[in-house]
Length: 207
Image (cartoon, rainbow, N blue to C red):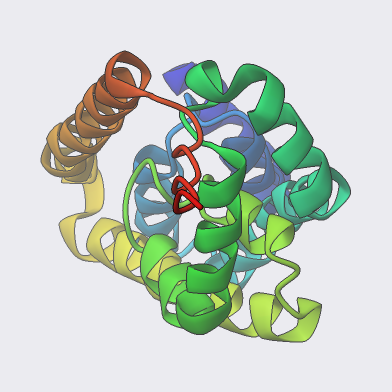
């Protein structure tokens, strides 16, 4: 995979960077922690312009996030609520929790999207609840673009500064990604094991 990424960056330039970041958002095993530092290293060598590197990476990443947002909009709260009623344990959500999560996202959606784009492993996932909650497309794109631009600028900047040692960044970030993924898996398993479905309605008082 490493050689393929290097070859596409060298052959495709800015278009290759945008394409890689698009695919990275759709297929997370392709790491942005390698793509953008490598592009930054190419800019340090004078092969690319570092500003255009960041711009290309941001565009590709935002397009990938938009695809997940559209999936969330298609899924929608009603369809998710029906699915939760049938398969709540494996979804780890009850219909009532779907409603509460939607209300919470309506209040904190903008900072959640912005912060989520800066967290490895969460960067892709955060777009789905934004779509499910029906977050305004303009607001979603604005906050997604801002968070994504900061993330790609950080990675490209580190690659630019470290030059041929840019792979060190992956060794810094990958453990964080592993911890986040591990925590998400453990949380999901805990929810599956302890899931009780809808809370029973309060009993009516006796006559």
